[in-house]
Image (tube, rainbow, N blue to C red; front, side, top):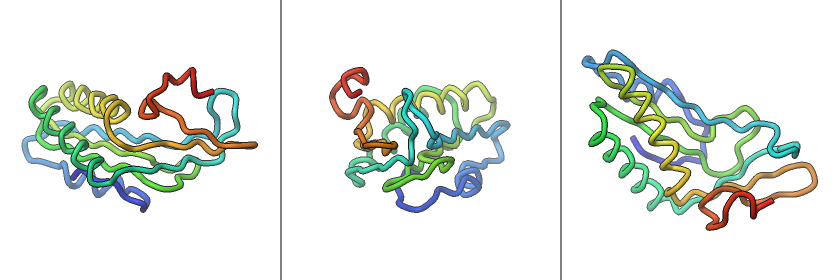
Length: 144
């Protein structure tokens, strides 16, 4: 399960998807919208993407993780559109026989998402908005 959606993400759906009789560990990662960033009062995040390419890249990340670690299953779902404070922007769920592989694959996935997936994040804050993240082609310090 590697997809983007404009609907809230259901954690239990991802956990159910990665459940496996050979798994002794399921690791969920939930990236949420926080109310502040670099001294700004954040109101929401707004994500845009090239959906078909984003989903292919999410699946590539899943395949690469399976080659690097002995995981059973992985699921990644990323939100598009406005995401309010406290809501999930991305959820990754990984199952494996042992916890170390699941934790490592989850961390790998979130780092790769930020580097390579064509999803762009706009931060809406009191007094303005700004596109942020490495997908802009600029270092984060240049985006302030």
